[in-house]
Image (tube, rainbow, N blue to C red; front, side):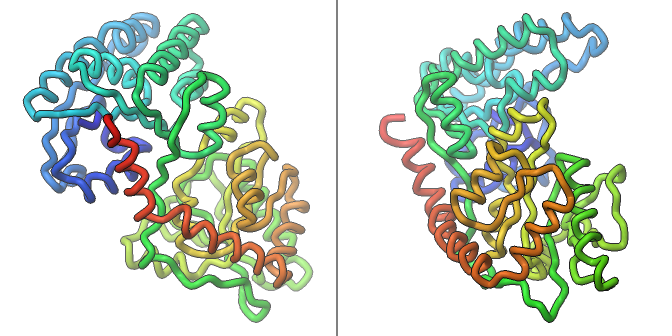
Length: 374
């Protein structure tokens, strides 16, 4: 049984698993009913969403959602699991699932497996909840991690932090890329415009503006559009979109692959602000697997200890810029776009990533994660 929430950050992860193993899952949601399009394989499904009111009485709502309601959710999830003959509880840890997942496994007497895509403690800290609640919640998170038979994380960097902070071993579960979908590796060419790819949500307005300014700096000497930004997905209306930026909106798979093939450099970034430092260290964006699919050099802008910068640097998959400065970023882009040696090293790094971030390898890892007595 998977204890999760539809339309959450873990949805891509669950979609891959449900497609591969539709007969092995019963799905219990803490975020409401799933529309048919979110459950096309008719997986056994039930839900028990938390109350949304009284939304203005914060302390009362915290007591309801995190202290009282998880017992109700866990009891309903346990009854649902018994009806469907579940043998393992797989909980995606976010919000009240941290408590509900552990209680469900205890009520059932079944092994608990947990998966973490975004650090739940930090997510709640950013919401400005009171200190007493955050301390209690982190204690619950630690208890759940230690109670679990196995802990899945989205990156080795998150695993490092959890080992140090909570004393738990982890398994990195990253959905990877299907071999047949990978594009042919390619370096930027001097005879065509260099296209810098941005994908999905942009988590830093400042870094987005720095990227635009860097492109403008690079184009200024010639007065031509030698560098451009291609954004695949919907761009937040609050973000700038000057003529150097092309926005496609969300695309079906065949159009997505075509637009992905236009990229010369793939852009990653982490916010430089101190309050986002924890997010930068623990987050590992799913767009990385699309960039590995593209087989184009990566460009990471952010603090030196952020996961995206460490990833690109340690895997030698491109270039990094650790200065919150548009001109420094422009120099990094130019060096990557104009140096065949730098690009060749990046493509060699990406070739190695094809083996690590492979869809088949993900399934093998997941089978081990849920097997061996779990």
